[in-house]
Length: 430
Image (cartoon, rainbow, N blue to C red; front, side, top):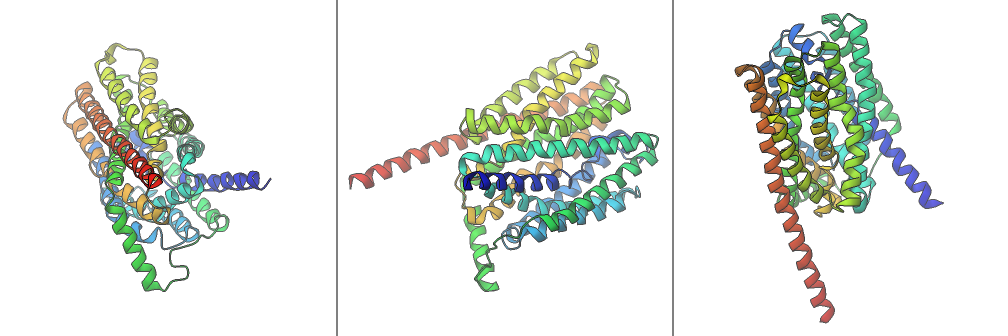
């Protein structure tokens, strides 16, 4: 009975984490629903939209160094609500459709609150909820649950957009809707999420800070963590390219704007609901290792994208184009669902879970600093199918590099396991 109650409490806590994790990034991901209106009604180019995410990524990357200290130093009861409410304030400003400079400032603010204060703390909380054998499903259900919340909230934004005329006013109404939703969830989070133990417990402030620094040193000296973080890097680099399936389908397959918005919701959010549980199940139950699953899914993604590029898109049916792009996206989302799960498999201490997650975020999310701008540049420079082909080849290249990286990590873990077994045998013999 006690075991059942503990399990129930575990999943209830996960649900509250999912609620915030599925809400906070809707404002910084407005391109998923409003990419075309951002161009036609806001007046932003592909490159300018990409630069917003580059500015976001710069603050994100620099800020994660600060997260390595605060994620294990302060309680999630404070950090999680601060992140949500801070993002909502940035959304209130973004809803005025400011100049390009204001657009960049808003994205920098959302990066500070959403990435530095919120994301590593959320990942730490999820990792500590489950055992080593449960990491794949924990992170898988986190991603799936976020997908459910994503679809509900993003569908609401699309509904508001249509109701207000699908133009400038519609986009502003959608942004206000996102802002109010994020603010509400931030307030709820403060009253619902429990406090937690911090490294400073029972220590002076100086001793707590010293222990945090020692933990950071230990984390960054781990080669396996560098490889695991690099695997995240290559998943995320390919993931960034999924955004460009939206303008690809509009330009090459000529689908209408409203359908583009609906596709964006399915592509970026709906696939989380499918990819999350499948990725978690395959990692835990089939491959018995998140790293091994990433290895083979990287190879599958590489082959799938190369085949996709060779298809005669300009003469194919719209339905086939939709299915093909969503199929590739599904592979990437199974990877995204579990790409933080290896933090337990590679043996990083739970005591420094926050620092390890923050470091993995520093390396793993680096593509956001350049990928959107890089992809946007090629689309602005090369017209039609040529520009999209360059983008898709780069996505295939990133996936292949991920295959090499994950293969290396699998071999290292296997060798370490053999060495550890030999040492245990020696000790028993002695």
